[in-house]
Image (cartoon, rainbow, N blue to C red; front, side, top):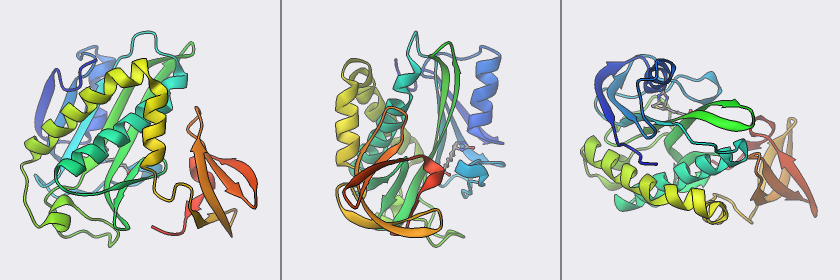
Length: 243
Ligand code: BTN
């Protein structure tokens, strides 16, 4: 596996994830192909949200993975690996970030990066994956008060290409670890998880509960200890109250 072994550089696209899906459907890509765009006219976020980004200010990219005979059980590990590579990339630019489960990247209570993973699976195997990354680099004004960027954190402008290069290197460092020692990826992910092993408030079924994150499982669910009992949550079943 080699992230960024082929790179499509675009000025403008609806969504780099859509472009990636078209490449996969028309078999015009390789394992590790990346799509990088200066601008998106229909950038997509999680939960059907729009992903807003000023033109030419942030990293907007998608990676295509075409794993060979890899079980769906490894899906969450790809997600965790991407989060780790993003943390490392931010660290390189002197930004200390944490992962807010499952895969938002936060700095000082504000979101600096989001990812959108889109998979095709069949016969218990991963057929293809699109890893979409929106990492705020030089944008300083956001409609959403809860957003930040590398520039807002460090007061320094960076070349988007440089950030992309650092991310490719981080992904290529973690990729063989994922295939050979997946448990290492999980351990490192847990170490970097915001509110890991700390009692904090969450909203579940409209009620506030106090719990402590203990782990994640191979389905990507979050394991929280509440009053001494462990309970599993899917993404939409629990809301963080602290940022
Ligand atoms: C989120 O809501 O946190 C996920 C945001 C993901 C945005 C990125 S930008 C590049 C890629 N293309 C898209 O349309 N979305 C992802």
